Image (tube, rainbow, N blue to C red; front, side, top):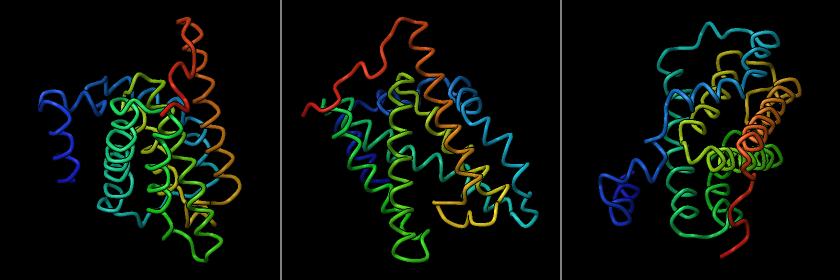
Amino acid sequence: MTIMVAVLLCLHRPSDILKSLGLNQSFVKGIVFAAICCSPLLIGSPIIGSFDHNLSLDTFLRNVILAAFFEELVYRGFLFGQLFRYGRIGFVWAVIVPAVLFGLGHLYQGYSLTSSLMAFGVTAFGALYFSWAYVECNFNLWVAIGLHMFMNFCWIVFPVEGNENAVGSMLPNILRFASIVLTIILIVAYKKRRRQKVFNYPILSI
């Protein structure tokens, strides 16, 4: 975190740091939009899962709120955001480093080599998804934080057997996939309504 702050101070004036990360955008709009996108998970998880009565407030805060906030701050706002927004490189190249690091950071969730690699793949794809939503929502980091937070919320508060790692079991993944598809549909529809293009930015340029 100290390194991140030092780099940001080298790149921006102190008054511009929040803007460079996307934290200056509307908190309410970002969280509400994320909740709507995650509605399949938020509605379905209590049905297919069971409330974890042993969940402590400390675990909830660490694994749902703080994990989503700091992971999106570091991986999306800092690593991806600075490369893409200010490094002027294409989306694909900017997302590779944070996606790989994000995936590596979740290898521990596997119980074997195969499951660890699957956890890497799932979370690396998650990094791509969060990064895309972050860009298309005008670099509102609260959107990415909200998406991450609500997914963590459903995963942790309403556990399903087989959800002990990032890969998860079939039914929760169907809900997660539905939430991702809904996010894409809503963003594309919003852009179309405003006569804006999706992927209206460099994709592969270096």
